[in-house]
Length: 123
Image (cartoon, rainbow, N blue to C red):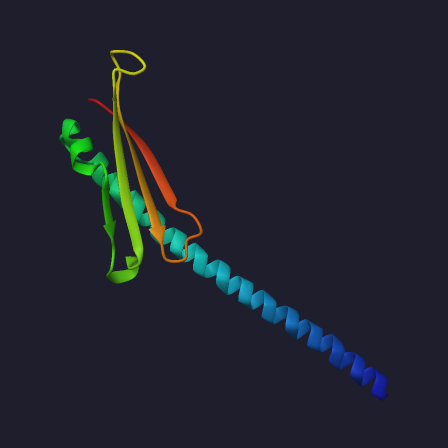
């Protein structure tokens, strides 16, 4: 091999290694963000399930509207979960009655809040 061929091989190998390092950094960042989104989604889904299981329909708004909690322990540390429950009684007609519940989770390295919304009808 000539010296030119060795230098060319080193340049190609160096470029490949730099590209691999950049890929590993981006992969780690994407993986970390998806973990936070999954945990936030679990938090929101658990609150929605809790509200759906709540027996007293007339008490849902007074019990859950405006409730916010900051979690400080366990895998959910650093997240804040807030709940909004709004009753739409008499709209769009006098025979409809439902509650719209929205749960938002923020915190950690989330770029935007994870939100889950459910509509619960009177039964």
